[in-house]
Length: 149
Image (cartoon, rainbow, N blue to C red; front, side, top):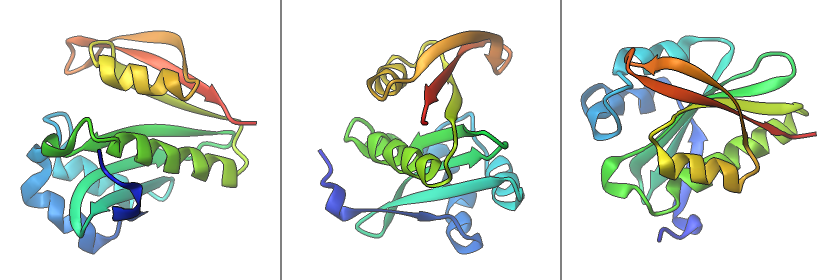
């Protein structure tokens, strides 16, 4: 497991975004450099990058509608999965939601992503609905929420 002392989670910048231009497939096929760039340029979006000993190992983006935080993604580099990096990123997102006095957090997760669903449930996210064929017009997504306040 990764020691959180060696993990640094910071705001994504144009410079850190450049890493993903040639390395986005090290994370997931669902995300592209173009989508990540759009997220960074969106004024309602906040993107974070996770560094482990100066290596990019993860990222996350969220939107901030008036009363909630909507988590768009939490992605961990394939070589670093199952080492608690996703957990540390999620904890940082929850911290941001609390600091901003948001009422709840919402996200979609592939119904087949058992590990992510287990993580979200551990942090008291509840399934409140399903989006049919949400991922690549094939896989369904659970809509999950967590009360903050």
